[in-house]
Image (cartoon, rainbow, N blue to C red; front, side, top):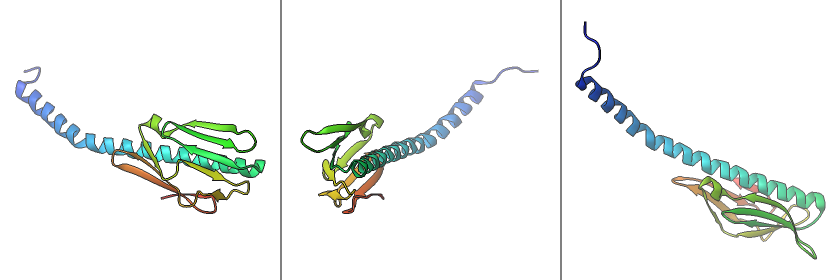
Length: 141
């Protein structure tokens, strides 16, 4: 009775495992890129919604600043009052491209100069696109 494995059997197993790994790695990379872009888009939507509702509840104009490393919201008035600061999508390895890096929201929730502002988060080949309407809503495409 023989115990153990031959060198040929070990080489065959290693080759099969290598082929399976080579086929799986690109799919896993694409999947992680999609997850990171989707997470960054959700965080942008939550940030925008929070700032918009704050403008409505307080009855004050809000300035939103979008940067890759920081998202910032401030009530505008005699002196600006920053009330919301969140880390940007850069922390997830995601890039942010904004057609306007600063937009304002009126106290009634409508955007001021924010119509058709496009925010695109991208990682690898995965991308998510967000667009503001003239009514101050944020749409995810």
